[in-house]
Amino acid sequence: MRRSALLVLALSACKPATSESPTTAAPTSATSSEAEGFGPWTSTLHAEHPLVGSAWHVAEARAIGRAELEALLAPARYVLLGETHDNPDHHRLQGELVRALAGGERRPAVAFEMLDPAKQAAIDAFAGEVDEFAATVAWADSGWPAWPIYRPVFEATLAAELPILAAELPREQTRMFMAEGLALFEPAFVARFGLAQPLAPELQAAWLDDMFVSHCEMVPREHLGGMVEIQRVRDARMADALLRGAAAHEQAILIAGGGHARRVGVPRLLHMVEPDAAIVGVGFVAVSPARTQPADYDQGEFDVLVFTPDLAREDPCASL
Image (cartoon, rainbow, N blue to C red; front, side, top):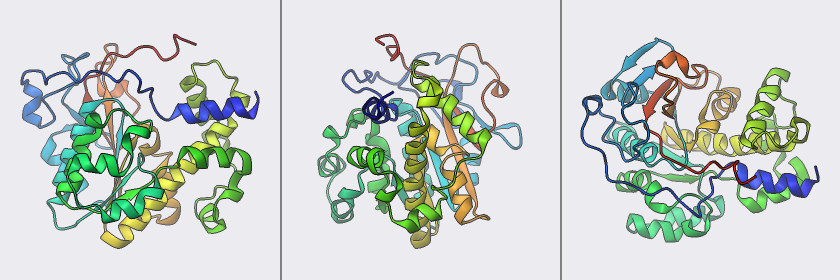
């Protein structure tokens, strides 16, 4: 495949199409899951699934409630909140957890995958209302899902006056990386995260499998190595922001897609730099009707799984 074709895929793989953003429905009526503190829900697909509204502590193989989850996150140096980008409930829950952490003894920095570092100065100087923030960072032109979907997590962060760190690899830098490779970045950055070193074979194979599926199984695996390298650089950009945030504020939170927040993504890079750092990764997982037990979901990616309803989408592969 030509490099130009790979670039098109690289720019589309991380962000869902936004021309037809899902409609935000009114929250469903209260259910018993609200007693655990995770509802009510905006998304409605599979809302009656038995796991919806529960959280699962992977290492201890047991369910935990909202208060216990917050207690687990509070002492961590790094908290990663892995979302599905277009699921509004994931952003509501991210915002609620950010608010809970901000209410503790520390004032964590919050790094966002969605924010362009070129906007960092404007972000640092921002002192307006939450919807004005969207204009400050040019959200409407960013390619991310509609602002109301993300608004809750930004509202919580701004209300608590927490430092905000931009951790995106912008589209233009992605294009430049495809042409220039690692020469685009400072040597210290490349060395810090081992970007010039090949991944372990089993990890490379797993990431190629992920890319193969995310590209609708229409691109041969041997042509997806560039996608894996872009993923590595994106993870490194987020890890770098978290390291800076924690150094200045003792704790740092990442708001990012689940693929970056899982153990083999950003946490792997954080451990390269701070081997003993306390890291807790939370994956917000939309349930599947065929999987009714926590063990039916991947137990190796996150420390805690929080199960939510899903929302109806058009199949992105159908048009291809």
